[in-house]
Image (tube, rainbow, N blue to C red; front, side, top):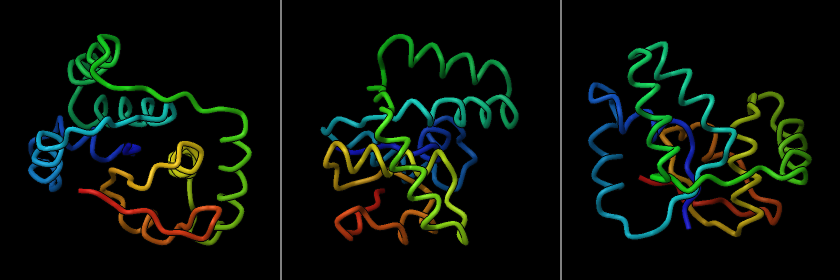
Length: 136
């Protein structure tokens, strides 16, 4: 199982994004299930709306509504863990969305995070002091 951050979803849509080719190739080649924490969706929608336009945002929302992505709820314990991560990495800073991505990965036992954000996720460790693998 792979937990997905905001960047790859945006990169799939924006052909001019520096990560578009890598993310598209990875996404096409993988047979695994990718789960998207619900907290990622507003961030993707905001980027699509402000950088590409309302039609791109609407198309993304339609794809979510039709079940093209597996959406993972964020549980109250995930928010507690996200808060602890944000405190731990305050000087970074680690934002709420990234912290919930990490918290969901920990809860589900995922060892991979699909992200374009190498800066944050390469530094954050799990509760058991492990690094996760970053793809693509």
